[in-house]
Length: 414
Image (cartoon, rainbow, N blue to C red; front, side, top):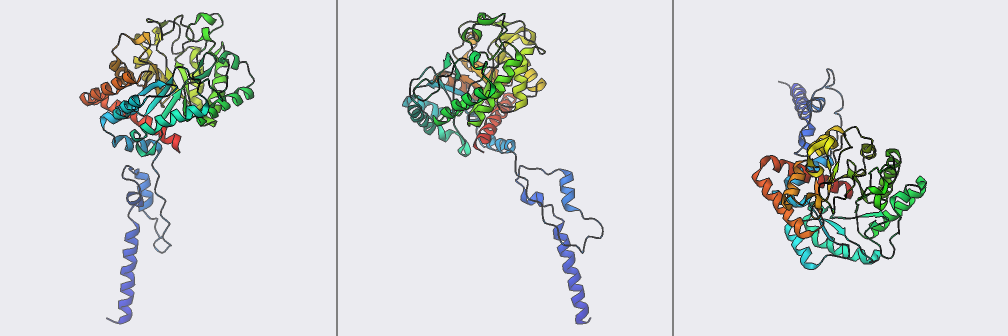
């Protein structure tokens, strides 16, 4: 065989080897292990059209980046069952600061979500010092350098936790609702910036409840204090979407409340039991502000503690899968964080043991059980972890809720 022939055969063999190396799907070698490429993706990267053997090799497509949900799922799976349970609960501490022993107990239990309760006359700078101490103490309980959640109630009027120097003296929502949209937006953005300066990243506002004019102050939890933005669903919808945008612009997560509406009951679930709404159903206009907020897609949802006979006559709202999983998630399409109203001091739910309140809330489709007392919040964490270890179905619900929390924290960090 001549030298020339040998050269031709060698070149042919080399070409075959190069073509063979191009056929391996790059998505399987470059993408994260949690990613499973679809058949169409794999096919597009492994096959070649006839007559392309002599063309230049195409540039491999960049590896697909995991979504926030996929990152959250991976983080959740790195946590123990007890850690997943602890990631859900929000514990209340005094708005003037948490004691060292209280923080030590919360850290030991794995808590990383805090609600500033009560009333404080500390300035913004003084509040920031107290919040920084809370965040520092609990930071190790959050994976991947994600934020500790610090929430408060800064609605305006009578519901304004932080009242010290530097914090805007915001009037009631009923007065805010009469302002032009630009004035409302500017005022709420200012409030949000003050909260951010104080180290607070969640505001349990705005109130999305509609209080009909004929009910007015006869509605103990909302109308009596002027917490509603209007007497019609249209008025409330316009205002709360403005508030949501303004808080987000300031770097604060808004929470619309109290789904599916707390504007028609006579009694207050904080101080009364047996509070029942017999009017609001799945087609009620009271749902419209919540629908608008869901479409806006930048706020979370808080669940009312009342019972709604037209939706679920057998269970209070925080324990109703018909209301949370059925109406809110499946019918209205909301898939984000669902937080409870206070489940520890509210008279409405007092007949249910503290730990069971958290279990029933998560089992119904909730995400973050809120407890205004840190000691009882620890009880909730322990109960959630114990139930998850004993019940595989509930363990999946805890993991799903933990994934939502981690996804929300990843979004805040990004």
